[in-house]
Image (cartoon, rainbow, N blue to C red):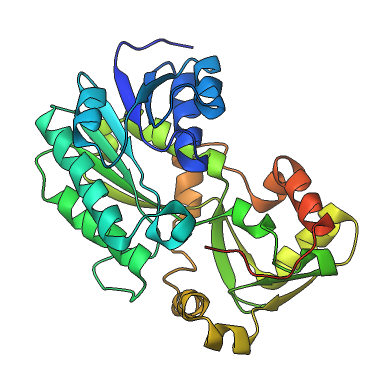
Length: 307
């Protein structure tokens, strides 16, 4: 591993996406600091074990962010999504404020490369779903700033497929696409691989917006792959029309999948060339995905848990 002198500040490093990025950057020799609320927490201590330095701070505390950003070469910006529910306590307005503030501070502190993680449904045209439109607004703000920046738009995480409440405990699997329609997915660990590659080549990726994914599968293909991995039959069906009609959030997501906007439009072949080793669905299920799939099959409860 080639050690670098430059430091990258990673937001969300105790979560899935930020954690993947921090780990990948460190493996590539970058000095990595992570903004955390409590440096003494178990998750923060786990970062230390990886050679990552936790720095106390809070998204609502601008001064703490400014201090953490001092001297940083790069910043990876990701915020808790307003679509993750009340447990995270983040409104649409707060997500926008945090995303813009991080970008503004990056300019003020002389950061040389800002990478912002958005969502594949973001874009110039509003979706009508708050936590996608928030990201579109943050994207537009970043593009107007005088800073080298790259925006990534990840597809749906493969990890979301093994959340409880999708019917796997009943030998079924329900999701948004119709059985014969494709949807793109990415393993969370591959987000880190891609971001590390972006930071290593700012001349190539600066001022770019990249939609990222590792594989594209239909609902029926997912059922076949799940059945093979679990060694038991699993049948796929789209969420019931009655559920989509009753739940505006789920119904809105299904609408965006049908329109293709949330189904994903990443150029997977080009991404595989640019970032070798991106996981297919089969590869993910043969590795990290298998224990979570089997755990979901053993779980009980039928409440959809997507927020």
